[in-house]
Image 1 (cartoon, rainbow, N blue to C red):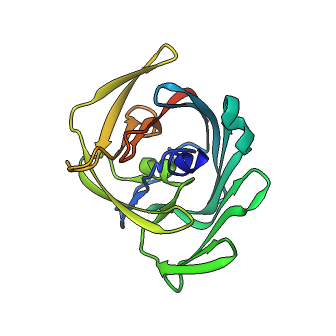
Image 2: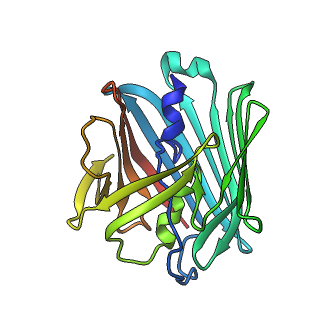
Image 3: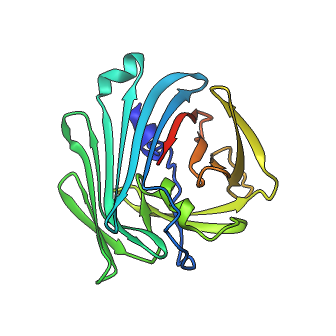
Length: 241
């Protein structure tokens, strides 16, 4: 069951998204030093999990911790904990290490080490090492959601996202809807930018709605697989310092 959550993460969806390759340099002075977010996740409209996330920046480095707790029978799988740490540069987040841990099962742990000097990504899956070329802007499941705030505003047009899940390195294509969409949650109306993949023949999709007025923090994440199973992650609490 929790295999579906791998992709969700702000903690959850891929979410699959990550960062645009080689974004233009911007000032980080006015950006948040800490973001705390809580999400509720449903599977086919039924309660599935709750996600607690914290993003913090200090002395030129960042850390993200995302904890997903299943609801009901899904709680039996244990907490899924994602952590990402690295540098904050003029181009945004530059991960150094990513970890995924599922409950107390060491076989489900994933590690990713980013060797930027050698442009090499090292992923450890079930004790076995996998390597892939590392390109500028690459993010991980925990960091991707907070990279959007570092991209040049306004976000528009088409973007390419490069993301490691800890098992593999993927690229995703997205188109940003130029018209703002409102997403309501817990009595709050968020003006959002909708990121959707190009039209395709299958029903599989991964989409994001980013808060236009809150540093592009994801408000909603939607993932539908080839079998029509739908996971939806909605922001319920947000604190920004």
